[in-house]
Image 1: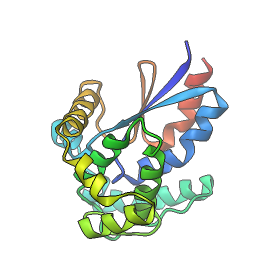
Image 2: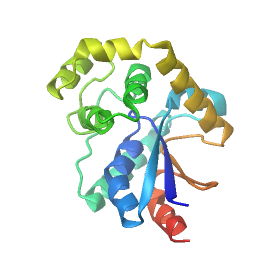
Image 3: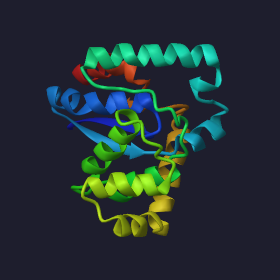
Image 4: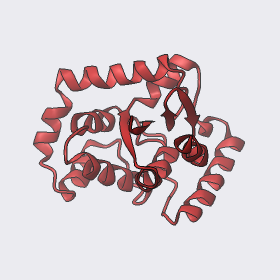
Length: 195
């Protein structure tokens, strides 16, 4: 049986962004496939009573510093988005709509970079349209996909699956039944893939 990493994520999470920058290489090192699971972090928070570290000022400050440590270690850029937190419902519907297509990673690259490198206000439809257009997407076609009832239902179902499996934040990864929360647990994910 081939090895799999299930990756529950939300583009509004800087930790999800950091994990996303590392996962493809990590998976390749272990001949593992990634099962992408776009979920709505706000729905997970609501169901579990959890909240963003940003809601506790001291924790939020520490988290931002810690994310910068990891960004340096990973050799990637991470900027604190001044519009954080951003309602990601439409963005995550987009990720769901392109899941399994050749445009999925292009979509994630455009959105993650706009959010965590370019510091764009991705809660504003006109800015999202500009970002996606620049990435080569037909914005009208994207909007049509976002309003598809099947896309909406799939995002709800993946979020419900996450909650059912014990997810309380993003990113959360699974190797088999073993759960790993946070981009700072990627070394444990690697160890699990070696078993």
